[in-house]
Image (cartoon, rainbow, N blue to C red):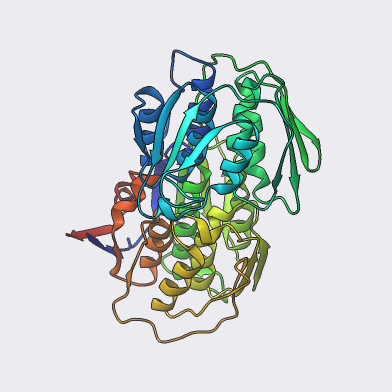
Length: 424
């Protein structure tokens, strides 16, 4: 399948964002551990959350979570600590994503986990049983989902969980999000030092819970407005072509969100997007771009790397993003994917030691009719789609990947005035 995109002449969008996948999947695990009777409200309608609901409410001997990395990590811990015997598997790409670090940590607690195929990778044979309470040490520069998976089962261990993190701690906001949700469900869990977390025993309470909208999804609308305003203004005079004022109104976001990706609003301010919290929602409007180069450590918001890389290139703003060591093991190798696809648009970006991505303004000849490959990665599709504002009739291959986190994305683009022509 392929979509060909065309941008509208004006932008006045009113968007109900999807519920947060990160919050939904954590809340589902906590709800299950609390043995609750009513599912959290406003759950995400994305693929990852659907497979999580299915696995928790109708578990089978073989649980196939498809491409849902969050579900693989969280369910590995959950199934290890709850009764039952299961084979946990996923797509071909999922079977290439390492899980040994989490499995070894769970085995230190007494978990029964065996590799059904390749050592260190899914599929996993898991026999759930009561686990022990022993101190666990884990590298802080691994995926935060490993850490969150361990933390969430901590309250059901007989003496809780003491977790020591070593080295640099990446994606700390995601760990904090997990801790906050655990407390929302009645657990006692907190940092005891810069690198240590204590989880008290006692389980969870069945708690009514409503899921917030997704700040990651919001980033694509920030990008859309930034590119639209850039196209419509003379950068030297900051004058918009037709005198109209583009804007986007986003619903369901909280100004004091526990989601780490809310920090994207501050970075987009420097890229020309103003954020205003109103009674109707979060209003995005253009204002002057305040930087000629963006240097930022994205270790706490790695899921926004694609959004900012594409945005900066198209705004002609050189960048240097560090803290991206987790991008190689996401849905795809996102560093390689960004390098390949931005080259199709005429931008030559570079990586250093798998953790730094930079663009110094180097250009190449763009493809005459660029078609962006998405690599089974929802964020590739959504980060590149707004580029149609500057590249008319940009094509997106395999656009259906957005169902992983934002199923209504293409419909919302059409609602905002974008033209979308599709073919099989």
